[in-house]
Every structure is written in C-alpha cells, then in structure tokens.
Picture (spheres, one colour):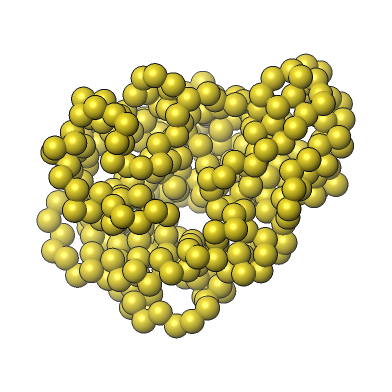
Length: 346
C-alpha cells in the first residue's frame, strides 16, 4: 500500500481492476514516482504485468485542474497517430475505489531525461535527441482532429485570451503575496496579445524534455506523457514552452535550463535553430510576436508553480517539495518581463 496522503488501498484496487479488465491479475503493489508535482503517478506491479496509474490529488481542486479523464481521452485518441503514447487500459470515474478519479496505462520502459544538458550523451546523441523532440512536436501539431475524434477537445479560436484569463484567475486565487512583476506581465500580455491568426491544433500544454519517455538505448521518443494541460489551441504555445529551457538557469535543480551553456560545444541547437527546424517541418515561413508567446509561457509557469506551492501549504500536493517552488515565482515573472521588453527578432 502506498503511504502518506497519496495512500492507495491496493487490495481494493486489485479486486476492482480484476473485475473490469479480464486479463488483469493481482495482487499488486503501488510505488509512487518521485517526479511530478501535479497528478500523483504510481508504478503498479501486478502478477499480470507492470503498469502506471495516474490519479487526481486529494483535497479541494481548482476548476478544470487535474483532469486525468482528459489525459486518458487524448492519449487514447492518439493511439494510431505518429505521436507516441502509452496504451490506455482503463479510466475509473468511481471515486470510491481509491478516493479519486484515476486511469491505468501501459508502463513504457526506457529513460526520462531530467537534465536538458544531457550529460550522459555524446554530442551526436544530443543533436539527435533534440531533433527527435522537434519531430514529435511538429507531428503533434499536425494531428488530424477530425480523424482522431478530438475536434471537440477544446474551443477553437481566441486561445491566448482564454488562457490569459484562466491563468490570471488561478494565479490570483492562490496568491501568497503581491509580486509586482507578475502584475506587470499580466497587464502587458493583455495589451500585446496578437490577433487570432486562425492556427488551431492539439496542444500538449506542458511540452518539455522531462515529459518525454525515451527508448532505452536510442535517442527516440517512446511516449509523450503528462497531458493534463492539453486542449485545442495555438501550436506556438508548445513551441515556446519547450524553448523556455534556453532561458532558464542551468543551475536550478527544479527547472533544468540551458542559460549560459555553450550549446554548440554540446551539439544542442540554439533557440533560433530549433524554431527554424520546426518551421521547416511544418511549412511555416516566419513566427511573429515571438516575445509574446515566450513571455506568456514564463508567466503561465509562474502561475502553475504558485498553485503547486499553494496546494503544498494545504498539505495535498503530489510532492513534499511543493512549497519550496514558490521561491521560483518571482524570478520567472522577472524573466517574463525581460522577454516582453526585448525586440521581437525572429
């Protein structure tokens, strides 16, 4: 049985899974993964196989947050596309089984890279790894929404206006103290949001290195994970979210970054090179308003981390380290402000 606030009655869970999945065989054990601050995730060892269980955290949840049912839906829909995802086994919406919504999915063996400098790889492997990230990102934004049944997965149009409203409200609902740069960037984003250009795609919402599962021996993405923030939206939000790592400090343990790192010496593409390769793959001539997209990503990350810290203080976050994340909110807001005032040079 998993212990602490995320405890699971493994006997009850095993009995339930055997009743809904003919091939499932218990008993089982549940071990919580250490990574992740949002939806608690467990490795399930059963007689039939190894699986992954992902559930909502306990306690009062913010509106539309921790939507594990949406995660299940989108990964199930992507099963036959070029976007690699685990096999979805079962979604349980009965909160009486383990106390919250959860789903069971395939366990993907392989590697998760937490340090974006990829110190264990050669230069050639790093180049291949980042190009693979680029390939998967472009493939994600080319997913046929009608063919996958995802045309109703979100509201098309006015994506950034809706996102700005959502994250401003969530930031204000979890505010510890006034942060001047957060208030500044909220006002700036409202004033500088570009007109809707009609681009709509499936967006992951948190596309970054450590949400990708890699093959055990090759620089290939085996699965894209953590779809909690996915919706229909503007594809550049994922591109900007990934490119944030170029601006984040390399020394920060919670947010692995590449600021100040000699990228050429490591075989890692620069921000501009990564964007140009993405545009080549998708047939895009140029990205305008890049500083808006990037500044928004920093603002949203700051709002998310404050929410995690807020839940940590309430005692229902996925990790004991959650409260400490509040110290990152002000620096992220400052980075967003700095990016906002840059010349838009792409």
